[in-house]
Image: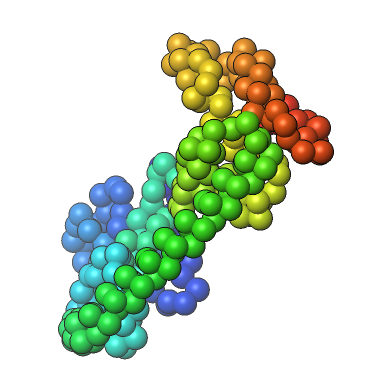
Length: 246
């Protein structure tokens, strides 16, 4: 069951409107079921009874339009819905005055081309940054594991540093090219590509037991790639051993 909607807070907006998951009836006019409601003294009220019925709904998705619509609107409200899986309320959009939405749409249309060009420039800049970072990550892999094939090192770097992936290359340690993060990325690649780890997981074997069974194979591959590594390889070997068993 979803918690009471009064737990929702909107620090920058006075009104919070809820899209209920269960059938609700207005405590004032008794109309229902309500697609949207606001709580007054812990009782559900329809938008008309709450004097918000003249507002129109703008779904989330267009940040510029939402921001401008709220700027133009003298009265607005945040619309939320409870996500049972995540256990929290999430924004679905806003309610704004219709005239305000019209003005906001006109403003967005007026500078749409400029914003499109800015998005293209930003995307190009991010792509260039990502390429430079992936190249640096691959170079660090080859420094620690000089026996690793060049294309494999670049593949590992590209996978680990993919923007928005949440992988080790995007972590603070990964962006700093720390040895631990680089070794962890290499270990993960070896585990999935060079051992039967995935097959063991698919057979129903618990993750920690699967890792234990393939640990020796991972270490063997890492030792092969470390051949000819510079002084200090002992420390990275210790890190790899911990990553393999972790």
